[in-house]
Length: 148
Image (tube, rainbow, N blue to C red):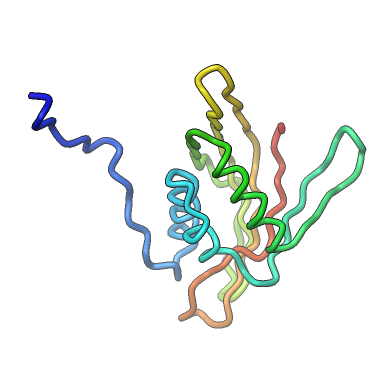
C-alpha cells in the first residue's frame, strides 16, 4: 500500500549519545555526515582542532584549524546530494584517559549527482582529547591519509 509503506528498519541510525566512549564519537561523526549536520559535527570537534593532509600535487602538507574545518565541511554538506561513511578496521589505538590516538580505515562515498560520484578510501589518524575521564571526547587532530 503506497499510503502505508512498511518501515525501513535497515537504515535506522544508531544513537551514540555517550561521548565518553571513542566509538560513539566515531558514530556521531558518521551520523553528522549521513545527515549533513554541521551542528552535530561541530559538537565533536575540539576548539583547538587541527586538520592535516598531504597535497601530492604540490608536494606539501596542508593544515587548518577548527574554523576552516567547519567552513569546509559545511561546503561539502551543501554541495553533496548524499554522503556515505563507513568506518573500517582499527589499525592502531592507545588507551590514554585524557588523550587517545586511533588510526581507522574508512570508505567515503560522496554523491554530488547521479553522474558525479567520488569514492575516497584511506585512513583517518585521529587524536581525541578531554579534560577528565568523565568528560566527552572531542577530536583534536585529524590527519587524513586517504587517496583523495
